[in-house]
Each structure stands twice: as structure tokens, then as C-alpha cells.
Image (cartoon, rainbow, N blue to C red; front, side):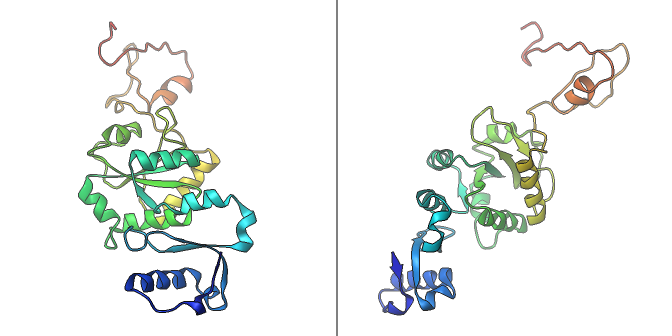
Length: 245
């Protein structure tokens, strides 16, 4: 379709807001006329709002249908089964952003959000279509929080990456500050395959191994004390509900 900014005429307040959003999206392209797609992302209702533009000259760079699906979503989406289904269909890796409860979820998406969430949102906006960002509440998604093996006392928001929502997909927990540079570096390591998965596990034993004693191994100590050990290791795997089982 073709949109000529000079042909716009005064209308309702809602129309003026849509027109203003379109002008912001097009920038210098708007004055001379624009040929392509303008996607109005419910600017009067959604948190992100605004308009995104795909010029006709860029149509051959990818699937237009996929572009529309990706950009119809907010940069950071609240987790729901509907959103999960949309993202699964796009086959995007998923950045899980955990906050404590609904009130903190509201605050995380507000203009007055803490610096850590502003950093998350900035990266999410820049990587739209490459990595999906979802916001989850720890109070209702505790099992997903635990899958990343975050410390229960971890300061929130917390960030984890997974290639999909599949329960057996590897999970990668970010254990550093939530700044744009730190998040970018974390995602880059994920893409290069240099991150070690976070294993859902008990905490490491407080005391080190004593010769002649049985040592408990957990996810964070298994590689060092078993697979990379310089001596033979006999492992006994058992259910946490009782050794006899």
C-alpha cells in the first residue's frame, strides 16, 4: 500500500494520534511519500504502541507474513498460553524475564520502570524478530523459575534464555547485572554456543570431599568432580524421595 503524509487531513483525536505515530515511525520518509507497509500496533491500548514500517524496497529481504506476526507483538510480552503459542510458531529463542508478582510486572512495563528493565526493553526492541522476550511472574511461574536453577533469593528481575519453551530444552541463567552491554554479551554467547546450561539442582555441599567418604554431587559440581576428575568415580543415581526407591 502507499501512504502519503501530505494527503492526511484533520479527523478525530484518535486519528490524529495514529497520524502522529505514523509520522514518528517514518521520519524523513513521510514528507516525500512512503511506499510499503505501516503496521499500527494498537497505539491507543498497548504498552509499546507506536507504528512500525516496512518499506516496499525491503519486501524481498524476508517473509512479510512473519514480519507482520513478529511486529504485532510487544517488545516484551507478558507470558500467556496465547503468547506462548505465537512464539512457538515463530520458532524464536526465548528470553525469560522473571519479576515477583503482577504489581512488579506492571512496573516493569511502565515508563518509570527500573534501569534494569529499561535495559531489557531496549535490547528486546533491538533484537525483535531474533529473540523473543517474555515477562513472567515468579508467583505464578515458580516451576519455570526453578528450571533455570536461579537462587531462590536471587534479586529480581532475573533473566534466562532457552531455545524454546519445551520442558527439556536447555536453560541458561544470566548471573550478572542487567545492563544493555551485559545482556548483549549473554545473548551473543548463547548464539555462539559457549554458554553452559543451568541444571536444576540442589545447592553444592558446604564441605569439600574427604577421602574415604561418600560425596554428594549436584548439577554445579558434577563436571568438576566426576566427568573431569583425574581418578575413577563410581556414581550412584537415586530419587530425591528416598535412596531405596
